[in-house]
Every structure is written in C-alpha cells, then in structure tokens.
Length: 362
Image 1 (cartoon, rainbow, N blue to C red):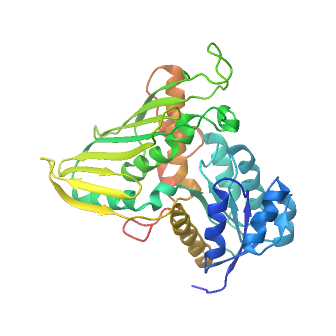
Image 2: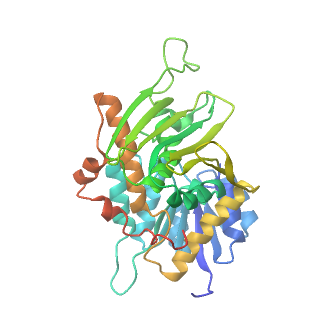
Image 3: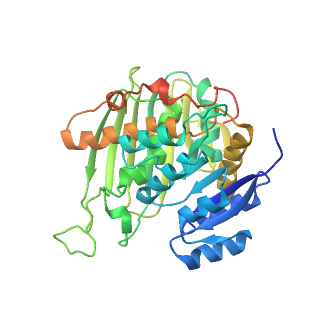
C-alpha cells in the first residue's frame, strides 16, 4: 500500500459535513484540497478549519483541485448531480446515504461512478452507511454465525425531526421516514440476512404540522412499518417514525442459539432462557464512526481495491428493498425487491461485486 496521501475534497460543509470534515483532515491517508458549500460563509469557515481553499461552486472545486476522492455531504437531490460529475472525472466517490432517491437513479449513478478505464482500476463508489461501523452492530454481526437459524429480526428507529422538515418533507426530494430513518435499519437487516424475497409495508402521513389540523405540510411519510420475508421463513420488521422522542434505536435478533439485542454502542447476547452470556459496549463520539468510515474508504482508494465496504452497488440491495416497501404501500400487497432489480437488468449477485469476501476486514 502506498503511503502517499490522496487528494480529497468535501462538498457540503453543513450538518454532519462538519463531523465528516474533521475525520478527513485528521486522516493520515488524505490531504484535504478544498471544501465547497452553496453558503460561502459555511465554506470559508470549514476551509479555515481544514487549512484549505474554500469554494462556492462545486464544479470549480473539482476542476481546480482534480481530487482523487470526493466526499459528498448533501441532501439526496443535489448529491446525485455531484456524484455523477465526480464519477465522470474518474474520482472515487463517498456519498451520504441514500445511494439514490429511487432505484433507477441509484443504478444510473453506480454505472456513472464506477466505469473501468483503460489500464486503470475501477474507481470506488461508497455510501456512508454509518451503522455498519458502529461497535454494537458490528459485534452483533460477528455473533450471528454461531446462532444457527434466525427466525425473527426487529429493527426500530424513532426520532422526532420537529416541524421544520425542509427537503425532508418532499418525497421527490428523497424525504420520508422509510427512506431517511428506515434506510440505515433496512441496510442493517440486508447486511445481516441478504435481500428479502418480498416486502409488505404500510406508511402513514398522519402527523400534522404548521399547515393546520386538516392539511399536512409535506407529502412524504412520517411513520412506516415494513415486513421483510425470506425464503427460509425468516421474518424481519422495520419500524420507523420521525414524530416521536425520546430517540429509540435498536436491532433485535431471535435464533436457535438465543437472542441478540444491539444498539449503536452496545450488544448483548442471551441464551434461549434469557440469560446474558456475552456483553459488548463502547463509548465513542460520532466523529469516531466517521473516522472509521473515512479510513476504510481512504484505504480502498489508496490500494485501488476492487472490493470494499458499503459500495454503491451493494447499497442497491438496500434501496431495492425500500422501493419495494413504498410500492407495497401503494399496491396493498407484498412486492419483490428482486423483481425491481431485474427491471434494471441486475441480479443480487451483480450488486455484490465489490463486497469484501466474508471474513475479511469490513
């Protein structure tokens, strides 16, 4: 592996972009060459922290810095444009989840961002699925192979966004409880169990905001429940809502060998009688999770790795499951993520092309 630092840029300095930027400039594998944001003040403040130039125009940023790695911390709609632009330049791309606003957009981005060039490796396209880098969930995945047949998985994420939803209020913009809060939880289930055979979902738009008691102020779902069914009769449920506090996030797994209850920073394994036989916990700030993701991505870029964690292609499985959930809410019947992939001329195996070999570093 080369020790030369990779030129990296950040597009989007607001929100969690600040935590991401800190991970970038503290990485021994990256050299931050520039930061852009549509708010010039935000770009300048962020660039001052990283000791690099600030840009108000993302195209100027990419043209003048010629980065090897582009990090995109934007809402789904503008992020798609940057991913395509960076991909056409041959840069490796890391983007905040989701991989796309819907499956057709995501497939198009994967094909743009990972074109093999003559005499050079295919660039990496990675999605920031943070939960895979959280200690509690990673520990749960490590325990799973010894539990035997899994019968039931339950994932839940409740978080009150409040009344000011911004782009999150629009379904076409990539908003919605199942897309936003559901994405990381569905991704965990697919990471653990693979692509489900079918998905049934009910999504609600009951919460009322400033628009008054008779009219919602947005058209995206605020609460949803999805049931994922597998060929071996394993069932998983994903429950999400952006209307309630306190925050509730967990993953529960029930299998022949016992049960696992996991959260971001903790995991407990119990036998069938409920006796705890393994406990894990860690106390790390959110910046550490970003640092883990950044290090994994930067290592893949430096090595020219063909297999790396959380590729855009692998995330197509997650998004196909979510698209099937939304379609089910419309049709009132279970829908198949595999059929949605086939409509894009893809098989599940195609989506796993960049996934690390089981047992290797994730």
